[in-house]
Image 1 (cartoon, rainbow, N blue to C red):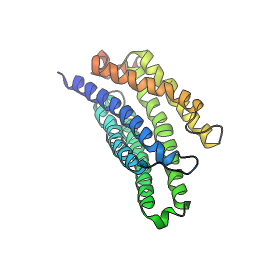
Image 2 (image 1 turned 120 degrees about the vertical axis):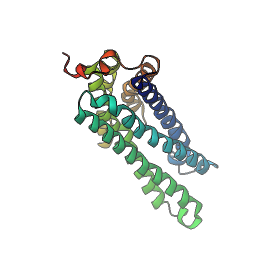
Image 3 (image 1 turned 90 degrees about the horizontal axis):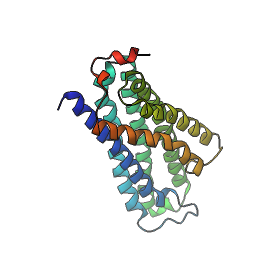
Image 4 (image 1 turned 45 degrees about the horizontal axis):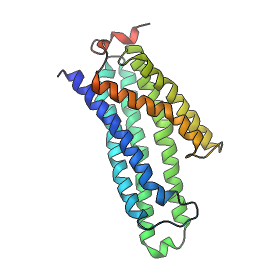
Length: 227
């Protein structure tokens, strides 16, 4: 197996891992973070801790995609390659802040005296919500545009896959801005619809990289100048 083929498989597996760990973390967090009436079910703290572990995996996988793809992307523009790698690191760092807020919330809830006053709880939930908006929405959208642009110009993957990223990245950013200004809730039908193209992009990209690898122009860097 060639180095580029190994890189493609590794990157594809990391993209799949980001999807799986992000979904698992969101599901496990909901009992603690999403209790609208304030009544949190028994076992929610344990589930939140498991969700935090899932998001630790997510942080590693997100940063890993940037590192894994850097050698290939650098052939098609070092600035874009560095931008993508550092963008993924920023995305991972924002997610990590959200993990800390959840862990702090669990700690406060274990302290009966602090838990009696819900002010700190509300603040920590708000911190997590904002990190979710800025990390897996805005930062993810910008990173998607960079990678999809290089993939499209360099024929790293079929162009229909790259187009999913070119459409999905700006769409999820626009949705995040809409949420920021109160157009609709972060977890809503509109938000889910806006996230679908990016979700499809990452799944299609991961599947193609694992099964087929990079396109033939990936090795020489000439694809970035192609019309």
